[in-house]
Length: 255
Image 1 (cartoon, rainbow, N blue to C red):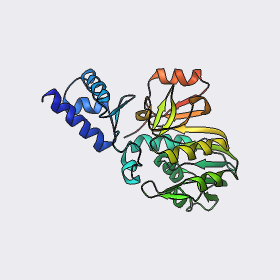
Image 2 (spheres, rainbow, N blue to C red):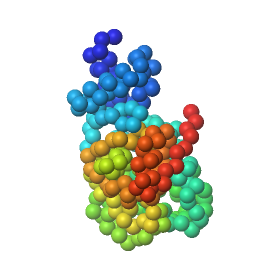
Image 3 (spheres, rainbow, N blue to C red):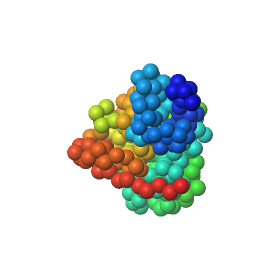
């Protein structure tokens, strides 16, 4: 296969899967991981994709939201493992806020039926938690984003002003040591910033493909996060977070 043809197919794979790892591409194209890294570097310079720790992510429709159906199947094993770990940080009687990420939905599925108050802008999270008798669910309301099945906008932001929570559990599209957390959708970024402002502690849930990535709208600096739950990130990221006073928990992923 010619180099140009491989580059074209790499972009196609990244756009189809939304995110992909270097190891996957190496096996798929039967070339070394170092060759794939050079390919990704070149393609990023050509603005055809964006490199992340251990792989690459798509920049197609970067300022629009990806549908929930697509997000559910992207890095599903990693998200579920991260969600299971996040649930361990919840205690009976807690008041928490969950964003509209698929990881938050996995949290809702794994959450025990104990006395809790949960604020969320996610329809999917609210429906999942409605099955648990002891969990009180409060929806932000606001402008509906059909693809993500979530509420955003001024009404959603103002509704959060009324509350105070112990913990905010959030995800995002990009985690960058210098640039902080970012999201591809400005409305979601603004709401996540507001969620953080009403919480005593913010827990970031992000799989390794999000690291080293900068997207359209900044949410906050790294220092504003108290705890990060992720999978197989490089030790350099762990060191950088810990230097900024952020605790990092790496989970093992099965399947």
